[in-house]
Every structure is written in structure tokens, then in C-alpha cells.
Length: 512
Image (cartoon, rainbow, N blue to C red):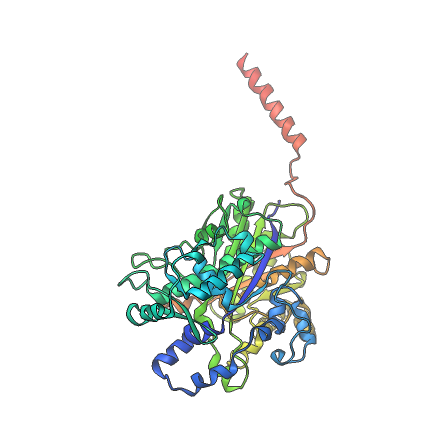
């Protein structure tokens, strides 16, 4: 069997401290219900600068400048020990600042909902035109020449038309208007979230083209897998983010659709992409997702209480290229896909059995045959202070324990197995962003360098958050080294030609 390949990937962060303060759902609710709270007063002293964000070890791992395992060599807390000579430019992507990002939101806005102050708009227009990624891979920045406004006009839209303000260093520089007078799915609040997701994903897609050998015209299909939903009151989550994002980057030959499954969405999307390519429906599929403004500062109260910075100050985004087998890129094993079935149950052991052990045993493998696992790679410096513990470590312990129960490992090997198969969490808590796929960039390098042979990517999701079911969700897939075979050699070409010739002879004889 010839499998599709992991051809390339890109990972980008957007530093958005003002969006955290004003649009992160925790802060927004606090402003509404307790505007004089000690937490809100403490926020300014706990915000990070752009340089702080660039120097932060987990962020450097996300964009590819260091390996996640390098974090073990950095003293904790990581936010007090920045990476030396850190750069906002990485092998896999970059870190974008908030000033540029508001311009991105305006540039991708097709319905004149984003209004920017005139001097700021002119400044950011030049900045984005000069940007080596946006300036080259976004089809047009014409929106940044349209409808500039004064601060007074922007404030009037906020006061009288319920527009959402855009602040930069605490200064009003723009707003996002509502898209309809009374449609609850098109309020300024929802449009803000949707445009944030679209703009960040479009930047991530452009990074994919900039960092890899893929041109926009060659993309056949786009699968968008964030946690936002766009539509109107008649179809609140109708979509389609995928085509809206592809339009920005000139993917003129592509179509696409959105896949939603909470945190497991990206892994579902990778399996879908691999299946589409292997079936011959499409040759080049891109799985992508933008960031979530709602989750910025989600655990902020716990971070402030422990006098640490507000580390949830970045939007996460990624784009992954799945393609036909080229004989060298790591393959995606479509015959080894784990799934949490409806009947699997919600116990941790049952979940791991369904998505880790079952698919391996089906093809005669064990947990020992996987070199590295990637599941829920949340940064522990974010989750531990909030009481959620070290999530990646907990997953690795469960996988190792499952291996011991299956008699693949000895009980005495538990700690060593956890060390061998895992790595520190390095991804911001953006829901869908941490769940497995951020490791694919590093995994591709490790496989091609011969450091590992095989990795399992695990996506897990909390379906019960939708209040329609108590079910959990999980899905996994395997990426491994390419054996160099680009065609199915079960029956070779000469044999096929001989069979056709023989059939034609028989048909000709039947006509006599």
C-alpha cells in the first residue's frame, strides 16, 4: 500500500496583550460583572512585552528554533530564563506583533467591518506591504487603503453601534462593527472572534508557502479545524473558513470545508486529509487553523494569584501540507488510525486503549514500536498553576502504564519509558492548537534525520462542552519514515500490461 506523506508544516504565534485584556472571555466577564476587581487592577503589571514573548522557551520551540526537549535544559520557570539570542523568525514560522495583526484583520475583512484610525492604518499598511510573508503571499492589501477614520468617529461607532474596540498599548486605534442589526450570530463580538481566527490562519497559511516547497495554485483542498464557527442565525456554524482563508492567499484552484471536534479537530482533519490524498481525490491538501481570542487569559486569575506573567497572551495557528507519496517525506499510515468509539467509555484507561493500543495491535505492533507520542502538548507553566496539572506528563504516564499492563514494559521501567516517549509541553492553551499536531514539524525533521522512525499523534476532545452529550472524543494516527516506494508494487506494470494484452487476445478470438 502506498501512503500519503507529511510534506510540510508551519507554526505561527501572534502576541496580543490588548486583545487578552479586552476580548479574552474571562477578562470580558470580569469587566462586566466586577469592574473594580483586584484581578483587573493587577493585569497591567502582569503583561509581557513582545521581547519577553519572543524569548520564552516554549514559544521558540513552537516556531522551530529549539526542540521541545531542549526545554529540559532551561531552568524553570521558563519565563524567568529567556532563550539567548532568541528570534521572532523560526524554521517553521514566526511570532507576529499586535500592531501588525490589527492590520491583518483589516486586510482580510471583506465586508468593511474593521475600522482603523487613519494614521495607524497608513503606518500598518506600509508595514504589511514590506512584510516578506504577507507582502508576497497575500493576494491584496487594498483594504488597508480604504475607509480610514478619526478616533472620534471610532468612539462613536463603539458608543452608538455596539462596535468592539481595538486597543494598542491601551490606546484606541480601531474597532470591529457588527455585521447585522439583530442577528445574534453576526454581532460585533462574534465578528471580532471570527476575523481574529481568519486573519491568524491566513498568516499561518502564508507561512506554509514561505517555509515549504508549495505554491498556492497547487493546493487542491483546504480543511480548517479551529474551534470557532461562522454563519448567520439560520446556520450558526455553517462555515466556510477554509475557502475564506484560501482566498486571501491565492489558492485559486482549491475548494475546502471546516471540520469541528473541539480539541480533537486537527487530528480528525489530518486523517481526512490523508484519506483524500490516498484515495486520489486530491493531490495536495492543507489542514489549517487560526487562533482563539476567547481563550486568551483563560487561566489569568490563577497566574496573577501566583504572581507570574499572563502567559496566555498569544494566538496560535498552524498549517500542514499532506501530499502524494514522494518517496522521501514521512508517510501517514492510514491503516493505523485509533478512534474513541461511541461505546469506548470515558475512563482514562479505556480511552488510551481505544486510541493508542487498539490500532497498534490491529497491525501487530505494540506501544514499544512507537518512538515518540504527541498528545495534548499544553505548556505546564500555564496549566499547573491553574490546577490542571502537567497534562503531557499525565498522558505519557498513562501510555506507559498501559504498556506495563500489556506486559510490553516492566513496572520498574515506568519513569524511563515516560522519559523516552515524551517531551515537555510547549504549546499555548488555545484548545485545538495543543492537541498533537504542533509536534509534526519537529517529527518530520527527526524522522528524516534518522533520530526516530515512528511517532503517534493523538487528538483528544471534550464533546460534553457542547451540552449535547456526555461523550468524550479521541483519534490518533501514525507518521513514520518513508520506505522509498512511491507506487503500489503488489502487481507490477509489466504484469498489468501482460494481463491487458491477454484479455484483448481473448476478446478478439471471441469475435471470430
